[in-house]
Length: 463
Ligand SMILES: *Cc1c(COP(=O)(O)O)cnc(C)c1O
Image 1: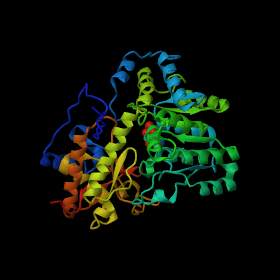
Image 2: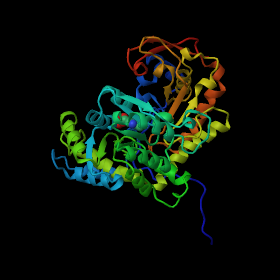
Image 3: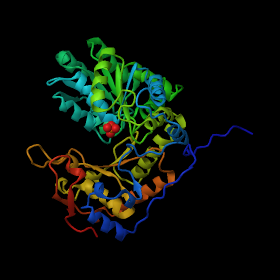
Image 4: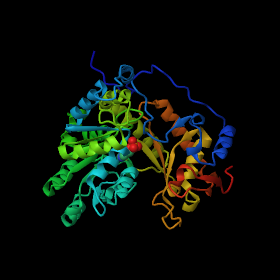
């Protein structure tokens, strides 16, 4: 016999505990969506069949994570669970000081309060919403310097999350005394989950070191980024994701992390830094806002779940299955003519509803309408990234967003290939009926972050 290599990429786990999902009829979904003010955020999760709202904190944990959680140490100070967590973070990132926080934005809050002041500038490939908000909260100015390829939705490029090094050089040369840190988000969440190459991480680090500016990685999806480096960048095919992650962190001076992403946990995060003095200032602030530095807003069992989860996120079988599941949905949609952001990134598929529904003007929210159609037709919940989310201007005027996208984010290890096949079928059904999808108008909105709580109404009843 000869060695055989199967082509099918299987889920690298078997199911040991199941959670029923709730089937509803079309008529029930019409009623539930109307009662929710046509806002999927206001649906009860139990009325959603396949929930692709976010990949944040929604993953399934492993038997080893649960085992650690049961055996956790809940001591207030110096718990064994903290030292296990600290050792895992130090082993993977190489950073000296590990500061636990209740989630990623708390790490951002502590970091920017400790390093930035009004008028400072923070360059990043693309700031994630909470990162931007924390930079602005201390009076500093966020600057997004992703390469121009990263702004073109149809363009295929292996590392669309890369920082534009020429622009970074120019900015730093002119303003280095106002730049307390350079950040790089891996993968680039707000840019479609697109990866950053190791060459780019190295180049950013080189600029930062030349000017003596600390370099921090927003590491939420560091493992997914490592997989893209392994499969797309010369010289990394034979390295493990763990080796690649370690190299990536070696070029930086610290990182912020949401453990709800590649920490494979339901809650948690951390800030890690090398600088002793900075660590001291961060820990002082942490005690004020998060808690004692050996738990930082988490239970001992959260620390256990993350200590184990960080390694599971780096398992090559898991990463192959995860990244392929997302590309698999992307391939099916592309083959059927549904426009999506290309290529698919590390955690989500983004449907271009603006192109798909040209008959709905931006101020009647085409992406919102398409997302609602997915719920009505198949009980699927994604999220609009379009004019409802971004259209409200500070002066109270409404403006069309740059793009009308529906994001379908993949919870980690929660769904199987047949769930993805079902998803594709629902999306194609909505695509085939796109002429029958009508726009929406706002009935009520809050002054800030209106998409979470707005109530809407269909302009022409969909038929
Ligand atoms: C989720 C996320 C954050 C914030 O983390 P939370 O745990 O949601 O507070 C920061 N940056 C990026 C890139 C993220 O994806």
